[in-house]
Image 1 (spheres, rainbow, N blue to C red):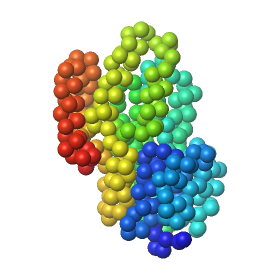
Image 2 (cartoon, rainbow, N blue to C red):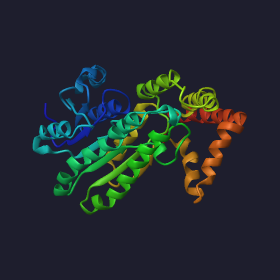
Image 3 (spheres, rainbow, N blue to C red):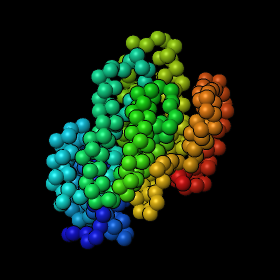
Image 4 (spheres, one colour):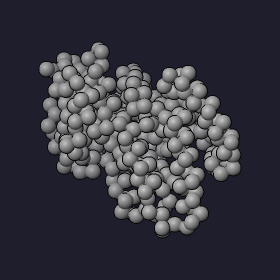
Length: 313
């Protein structure tokens, strides 16, 4: 069934997590404003999306194969759409990586960048010319608060998100000239299968390439710290999806949008001190020197999280 007058939205990385939640939320929009093309690299993983889509499947939501690491795959998907039209791109496909730098291979780092950064570049390169020609379009990019502020043992993942932020910030000026909007969505901790898998792999990580103290810090301090943060301020994918919907329907969406109000004080430190020392010192003290203060802070955030219902703005 054709959804008349609906905007065509292409969403990547829809097999689980935020991508799945965004695709389903847009497809179930009460005002029927969207026709969603939900894509994933491996169509064998489509069952969860099909189940979540329910009655919208093959109506306001269709599932297609798209591998963000392959230009031919992207082009084939876009060429299969009527008039190649994509009104809104939601770039969500991504992979994670945490752990001591010495224990990670350069090839794994390159593969992460191939998805997280170059995947975005390939999609924009394919879709932006058509958007510029039509003088309309919206490119929505799932970034991260780690694209604003680095974090211990997230060196390579944060670097990929910093690259995403720099790419979009530079391109946004040109896009504006052609009436194409760009929005960076910056979630903090989000409780998804993606995150769970990253941390499960971290628990089993071979740390033999690093020194004993770094291995101890990673296992005994960082991983427990991360679990506490996720339990205290973690959002659901549905929270992020709802805010993404609001950004897409906004007449003047912001260039940057942090989805988690409770995380904002941590990223605000970056802008408060031009030398960059304030956030580094603060994170150092939180992680290594003030465990009681961290636990107390997280307890307060947990209470606020419950009172707010979903901890999001």
